[in-house]
Image 1 (spheres, rainbow, N blue to C red):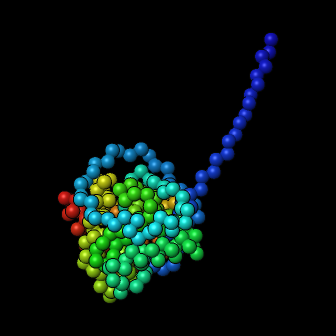
Image 2 (cartoon, rainbow, N blue to C red):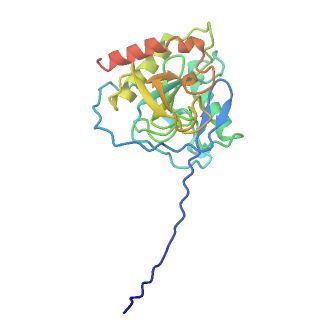
Image 3 (tube, rainbow, N blue to C red):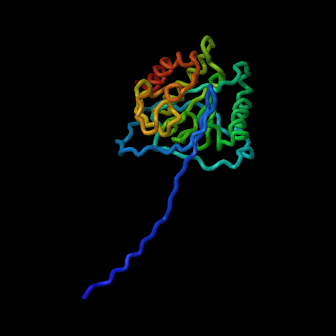
Length: 251
């Protein structure tokens, strides 16, 4: 006898849209869809120890009541590269005013522009003080909104000021950036002097979506995006920052 078969079909729709935001010296761009590329399993990470530098928490520059109801932070598996930026803001601030400067940057991004948070993971003032930027924990791989197309598995470090050609870059600032780079990349065992392959997540970077780009582990924003950020003066100091960070890792 023939056997009757009843087949029940079900379908559950699922849409994932992660909106990331980007900021730097020459204009600000909104990321449309910035989803991480699918990656093959990776070997275990060998930590390259470097001391964690002092980092001023968000609570020192941002009142909890001013967070505009931002969503929970997003995370990647680890940080394998650092993008260096400048904030394209005035250089003549007193270092005691840095929290106010960061608060103004935050207000500009989350107010009229309706961003979910400040884009940079960290900010460094001219006296070498490091500030926590984007929420989520300084020791965790928080997905930033600082380098359009390359926000995943990277951290954004912004030098507070404008560092175009001929502008002095304070040594305290570069030393602090190097210490931060050494510590943050050390947790992933990454040599600051090396190169890394990053896959562009959208067409708004220098590379079309899906393109694997070979970039410096410690890169200026202009390596991944059409911009002059972090300015020619700070860009010229990146080799020194890479070498100093490697020494701090014991390399």
